[in-house]
Every structure is written in C-alpha cells, then in structure tokens.
Amino acid sequence: MLVGLDERFTRLGTSAASWPLTLPENPGDREIVRFADVVGSCKTNNLVLGRNDKKIMGLAEDMSISINYYAGGVIYNAANSDWRLL
Image (cartoon, rainbow, N blue to C red):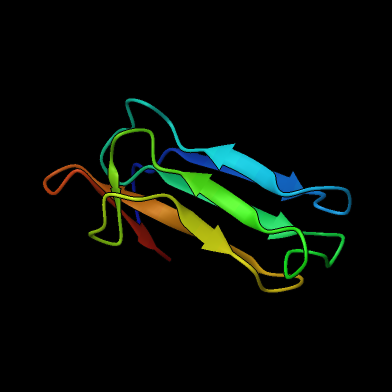
C-alpha cells in the first residue's frame, strides 16, 4: 500500500479529436494522475500527455498514447523530476 499519495483521475473521450492532458506544473512527490479512454478511440485520436517542463519516462518530450480503451496513469518522482508510467 502506498501512503500519502495525491491522486487525480480523468475520463477521456477522444472520439472527435486528439485529447491533450497537461500534467501538473508543480506536482508533489509520488503524485499520481490516472486516465482512461472510455470511448475506445485512442488509437485514432491519441491521448497526448503534456509534460509541462518535466520529463516523462526519462524523455524531455510529450507522450502520445494510442491504444483503444487504455486505462493507466503516471506517478511523479520528485528526485528525478520525472513522470513514470504506473
């Protein structure tokens, strides 16, 4: 069990266009952002995680997710200024 987490959840509807989801500008250590493609159209209309000047998986670039019905999240590691997939 993880203790002391700040968590957010977003349901995505990407049926009309790509969905930009900008990650928090000043996340706390171990902050979690979860998301789910409830429409099943991420393969056509990608979810784009905006990194907001932080790294995602060690890369200084936004991340595109293109898997229908994808449900997942990212957790922030303050020591590395990095978001990691859960």
